[in-house]
Image (cartoon, rainbow, N blue to C red):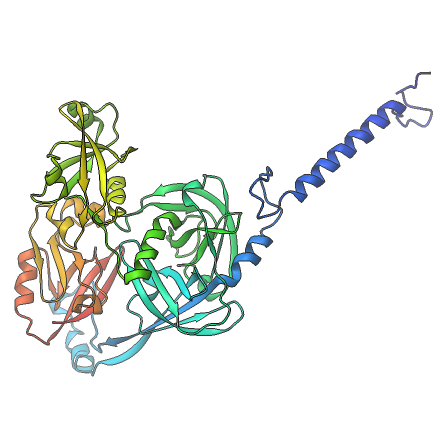
Amino acid sequence: MMTSNKPDKTGTWRLPVMGVVLVSILAGIFFAAGFNMTQNTSALNPSSTVMVPANFTDVAMAVSPAVVNIRAEKVIKGGGAFRHFQNPFGKDDPFRDFFERFFGDMPRREFKQRSLGSGFCIDKAGYIVTNNHVIENADKIKVKLKSGKEYDAEIVGRDAKTDIALIKVKSWRNLQAVKLGDSDALKVGEWVVAIGSPFGLEHTVTAGIVSAKGRVIGSGPYDDFIQTDASINPGNSGGPLINMKGEVVGINTAIFSRSGGNVGIGFAIPINLARGIIDQLKASGTVTRGWLGVSIQDLTPELAEYYGVKDDKGALVGEVFKGDPADKAGIKPKDVIIEVDGNKVEDSRQLSQKIAGVPVGGEITVKVVRDGKEHTFRVKIAKRTEGKESLALKQPVEKTELGMTVSTLTRELARRYAISEDQGVVVVSVERGGPADKADVQEGDLILEIDHKPIKTLEDYQSRIKKVKKGDTVPFLIKRKRGFFALNITK
């Protein structure tokens, strides 16, 4: 007997009986499949095939107890002098005498500068990872857990070049630690979670995806950031970036923003880069990097063709320093380094990162292209010391009693430190614990003025420093990235 799919007398359409049964079965299958997909969206299930997780609750609950809020405090000696910047009147300013008379002789006073940030505990011994800029030169550090308990912490070690710091809680009870993941395994488009204290709002959880990997933002010589659109704001610095397994894969460090707030572009230090730094800081409080003993530059398509390199990948050796590892191994200027220990070298920055991560005394195999032919060398890595990178620049440098090394600004330094000016004197290294370090001078700072006198050349710098007597305090005006800072350094 056949059923009709024509409308009945009431005008209502009637489906065939078999059709109704079939639709019901298909609907049941679809519902069941949808239910199973929802059930398989556990935030910690890496085998889930669902594109969007049902929620991030499991990740947040698992990791939040190990995330801390950090309050750092340091005492700054401020001056009472009023300072005009970009004064349109210059020396003829009619208000100059007024301000100097009433404010110029005011006694210096101390005030407390506070910074907020985040961090995460890596073991039950109380070691906590954060950013260097969160606790740098801090006199007092407070760590607050999700439970509300607060503890004093001390700096174990810090590394300004990678902006990583390690602190330790002096006394604690039942601190929970995170699990470190594999940042190399991260893929663009993968879901990640950030936990921190943006604008002081403790234990804020945000989510997004990995937008890109290997980002270079001009913050230092070892840039290799994970870019994410998980909401990150001031106060998130030092907090963890977490994958869907609940593992820390990055340290939230910086944002790109013209307003100061989140615009969907955040950067995190890959945890694989941080591991070696953290281990060294825990062991000795300092970081020792490998030194090959060469100056290098990126390989352009034109240079690749000229030197007989098949593709544009590699780093061109500009100079080999006598007596250093590369020289002893037989590497020469104009060699193009294409491999280290069998791994391809993409560019000069990647080569620097590879060498920096080799333990001092360790041996590596370096493959180069010379006159169109490949040659292999065995190199024993030495210790990198501050100031050696400036030797490659072939520019005048000056190491002063102030505990810092400065150099004439070059195109390479301007590019490295993202400096827009075309002349000046730049800080290339700062001695730890020295006068400059105590005054918060940082590598990459551009010195604009000393004692209100413009500094445009190394000769200007030397002339001004010679006039400063031992024990005297002199004001410096510096430019750091897009901001200006007035610092007082005691010789």
